[in-house]
Amino acid sequence: MFKSGFIGIIGRPNVGKSTLMNHIVGEKIAITTPKPQTTRNRIMGIHNRGDGQFIFIDTPGIHEAFTTLNRLMVDTAVRTFGSTDLLLLLIEADKGVQRGDRQLIESLEGNPLPVILGINKIDLIKKDLLLPLIDELRKLFPFEAIIPLSALDGRGMDVLLDEIWKHLPEGAALFPEDMMTDRTERFITAEVIREKIILLTHQEIPYATAVTVDSFKEDEDHRRIRIAATITVEKDSQKGILIGKKGSMLKQIGSLARTDLEIFFASRIFLQLFVRVRKDWTQDRRMLQEFGYTEE
Image (cartoon, rainbow, N blue to C red):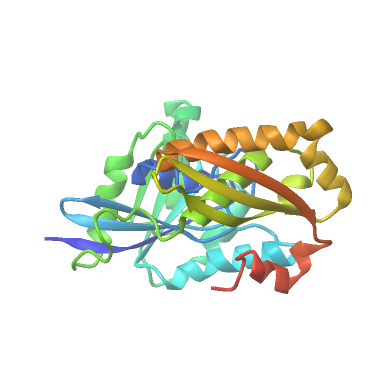
């Protein structure tokens, strides 16, 4: 019997949703950083095996939103509830049940979809602490299954996929076997650049930047891809920090991004980065739409 369907991955920021999807798909299609609210868009990752096609939807972490951008991110995650065949809720084993986890679980009351709970980051806790956590979670919601796992080292992934398969509808594959995401090369390029900005900068800068790819051209001999991208910030001071002394920060961002892009595209990359200021763009719906942060 062959099955295929959509699995919405939901949870608080930084519980490991993107890491889990990347591990299952086998490619880094969603960026990951230690900082919250790294994922801004809905990203699809496809995993194929002999008896099914698993279409994962990685969503922004559900959090208290104060800017227009953050509200759009949360709305994107919440809308996943109604557009998938089942939900995979992730929590962190080492953090226990947080207030945000409880609020999210409460929001699932009355939801008609099956919900599987994944307890992620079991590599960070002692085994004797896991059973009491599972018992606590069983009392909060009638989950179809509770699966301890590690998105980092792969523990529990096969068990997770087998459990998900039970709840997928029977049917043919919905996407070609060689397709791993619905996102374009330009989107992935912009996200890789944004990941390096988040990793290298601090305070408000990671949350005040957007990246757009202005050009993406492959040489005729297919040996090099030439990319030009613009980083948008909200303040002149942020622009100065991003560029750095004699362009040092921008060079570092470009170097790290180029390394990842060369691995992903299996090609040499020529990358040019530019920085511009657009005041308060995170509150401007027109600019948010321009950057792709729209109400899908």
